[in-house]
Image 1 (cartoon, protein in one colour):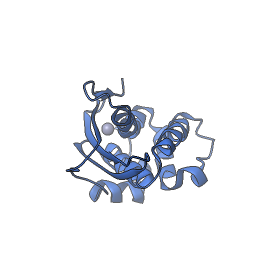
Image 2: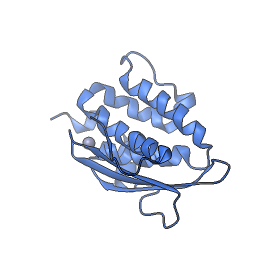
Image 3: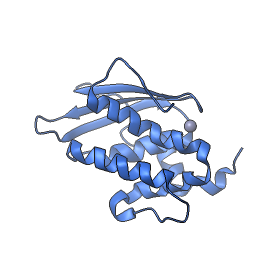
Image 4: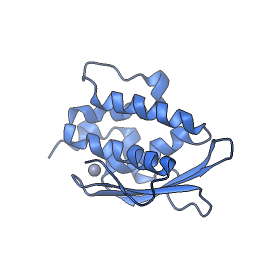
Length: 152
Ligand code: ZN
């Protein structure tokens, strides 16, 4: 077990305790399931895209560790109201951050609050907890409803 105090910075504690955009979207154009077998995190994401490709609304449900829930909460905040093309770019930046060398400072100008999740690099086994929501959202965007997104 790792020391929770080192990793669960205030933002993570807060977003785990009261996750933003948590719940169901009654009207959604895309949705997907995601599962991280290493930790047991399960997410379901809902996405409402406008005809112009703007993320009009986004929500998630699920059960998982604090990192998976906080990451999903932060992700929904980050992409709501943005063009869906920005999602892919942000996913790439996020993926880069959590797999980069610890000495590299997260680019908080591009990542905003998501940069706090750079802390997972100290705990490689938790990286998939942080990326699960992104993989799940990508499979929702790509419309592959039938195959749950997996981190493995
Ligand atoms: Zn987890």
